[in-house]
Length: 153
Image 1 (tube, rainbow, N blue to C red):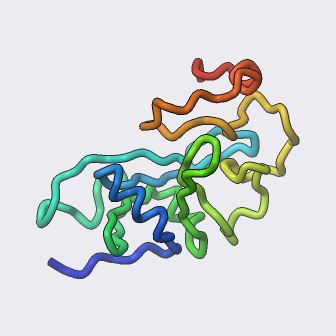
Image 2 (spheres, rainbow, N blue to C red):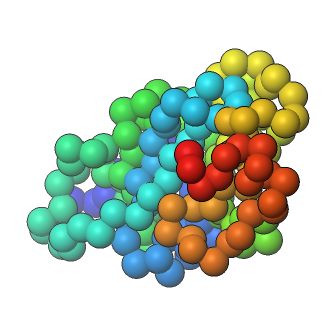
């Protein structure tokens, strides 16, 4: 098997450890939403192992980093070069995050949304307390739930 292709962005050891702990491949992409118009989207994909892995899947391009696999969607590949993928267990909620992205000058204060200039606090599209898709333990603050209509969105 060929050596894995490294992603065009930095992946911290903390992020690699969390991907390993989740037991799958981390899918990173960009979707519409958030208070600045676009948001990073993360999910865990459980795939075949070994020689069955394809460099390009229907969901994204595969990258390897020591100890973990990433699938990166087309939209994310456009904005992630030069950025850093990190994971923090101390944030509320614990989550993956993109740090120091030179390609997204307009970001919201929680760094989950980018694109248009940040419109300020209290937006209905706010993602600051939205848990990771696999996290069923975090209960966002009630005020944030009322403001955003969570979990209806």
